[in-house]
Length: 371
Ligand SMILES: Nc1ncnc2c1ncn2[C@@H]1O[C@H](COP(=O)(O)OP(=O)(O)OP(=O)(O)O)[C@@H](O)[C@H]1O
Ligand SMILES: [Mg+2]
Image 1 (cartoon, rainbow, N blue to C red):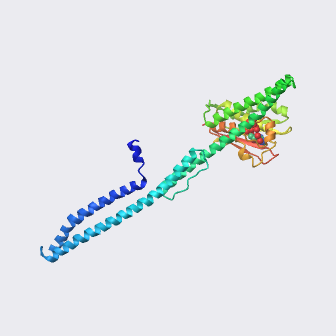
Image 2: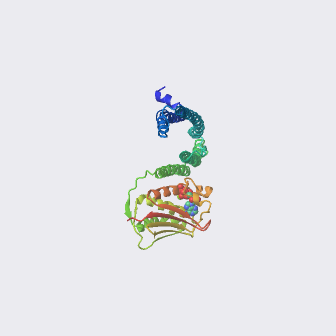
Image 3: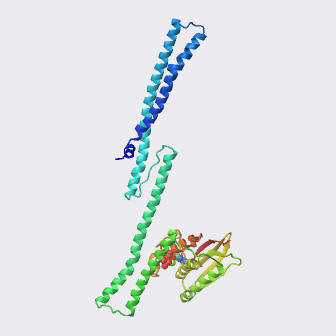
């Protein structure tokens, strides 16, 4: 074992005691020098100045008494201080060791995968409380990340299960001669394969966007153009769905600095959702306006609406308010997570609101106006 390795093994109590003993030894040497060399001379001088004879027996006796009192007092003081130092070192060392021990035990548990472990406050002062606080904050984040990972994997497994089961079932039926490899079979197989392909693209997009590694090709864009592009892209789908699609841009809305493709993707996700959740006869509006130093893009619909308990979650990956219906309609619950990550990559925010089920929903993207 190296020298430094050995040195690390010396406990806290002996180190503290050694430090206190050095202080004590310094005090003792100083007291001895003063008591043995300086004190008697000063005492003798005072006796002589008081008019007593140098060799007077009373003077000699008084000087002897001074020396003896000084050394007894110094010895007693040193012994008491040494005892107190030992006591203080043991108590302090135990408390510090208990507190550090709690952190190192918790760190070991965390390393072994027990994410619920936390360190209590030691009461040893601000530095130790800060250490415990930082450790607990780190444990919180690790626990959140772990929970998210578990949920993501479970969701992912769930998402791929249905298309894979369908593909496997159809192939088996074809092999057994129960089903012909006709246009209908091919269409089902293609549809399920497309669903898996879309899922993998969406997952890759959201992972990149959330990790912050999307490269934005920023350019100045008038909101008018972005709104018109979004409406044109969805016009045919809206007509097929029997939903009226409107566009409106407030006068004087400033330009925004955006990656046009990414912003088109954000608005298209919102318009696609709105169309999917608006029954025939309803309407979907895409609006642009100004709010202080920001430009807002609002996609409103008169459709299904979103219940208050679902609103805070709709931007989470794989979240669907009406799981069965939303899945049947082909959604995997990633669109809004992508939209949120892309909006934030532009320095913006995205919010959802709804007066309640059956009363429509509003999604507002807020971007800083280009200066
Ligand atoms: N305009 C809307 N009206 C009502 N509910 C909505 C609306 N937009 C989104 N939602 C709800 O929020 C959920 C999440 O939306 P998101 O776009 O992330 O997923 P999706 O549309 O189901 O699937 P994907 O976009 O991945 O194809 C939807 O499943 C739906 O329940
Ligand atoms: Mg969607």
